Length: 487
Image (cartoon, rainbow, N blue to C red; front, side, top):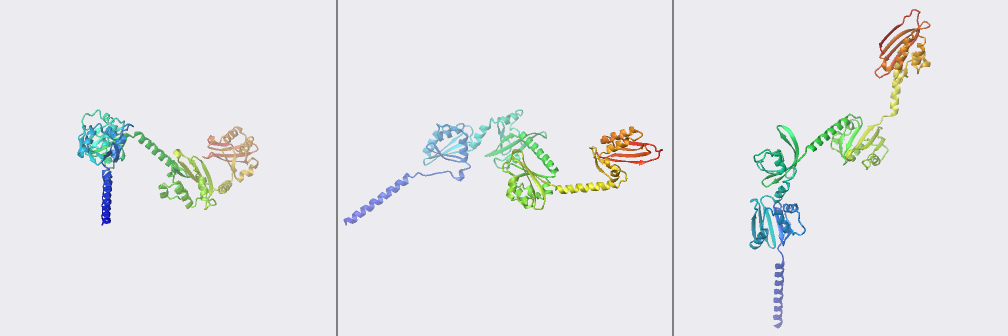
């Protein structure tokens, strides 16, 4: 019986002790409270013993705009941020602790309210009405050098900074006129930017880059001058057009890659001569993609590793100049050059190198055809270049003046010594020495020994002269007949 009583007493003691420990723990636990996602669009601060324990983004932005001296705690920092609109914040915070809540109106704007709510050991402070960050931003931009103004939903100016007011100083009515048409910008989300022109009397006055933010009862706009930017962009566009036209006139393939190695400009030769697809070039491929496309079209070296060729053509150093030549798997001989361009960009040119043996064969064929054509002329005929040397002659010329083949002037001079009227031969010699001064000369002169000479000189557009002259027997009654079309 005594054991039972003792056991019961111990059971009661442990039960009471467990209840006391649990109740003490529950009492000691501090209720927690934090801001939720629904609060993010509002301006809310949570303070505990003068320290900021949580705040929404707009609330943080307000405190960030106001510098905090090292000797101020968070509560004092908050008071300095709103001191222009609210007073006696400490008293209202104490009222909230006593009564659970308190409300304070701004002495400058009745739309602006501060509500205080006590939550356990926390003080929840919310700013209602016009956004604090918007109001603080307006104060900061009041003396800004660029245009800042606010419009209501109807598009009327409800506030403007000093720069805007100066532009409208000749206007005495209110609301002020809108200097810029922001209708389109209002349809865009807050923070969007648009370039807008100011037009007066149907004439363009100025350009502005305009951004905006959405307020609770309207919009705020920020406009910075953009005339110089517009002018620079116009010059850049004109330069690009000129470059594109210059590129288009070149026979070699040209590709301009920017600092990020993206294709920005190319000429038609890349598509016409090297079969790179236009749609591929218009997609602004990277330099690596461009080189792999050449490989796909079998325009890379036949007996060289692609990686080695690509590295040699496009070194990592963008200021480097590189040139390389190769023969493709199709037998085409190509030469590519990489040259640095402005602001870290670079230009690649690709040109097909002609086969010199084919060029030599073509020139030889042309010379043979020329000689065959000259041989059809019965008169001794030669062609004199601008250096006064024979560059071609027919067989009749070679037979009659073989020893004078390279010096037709000497041949003519030799005949001139035997001419009865040597003054005419002096003119012939001058004509042969100055081929550009003669357009056409035709003459037949009597020589000593009952012979005569026929002479015909024609200057071609290329500057070459076609010369025909021959000595032949004649009777003693031969009469000189000379005619000159131009000298």
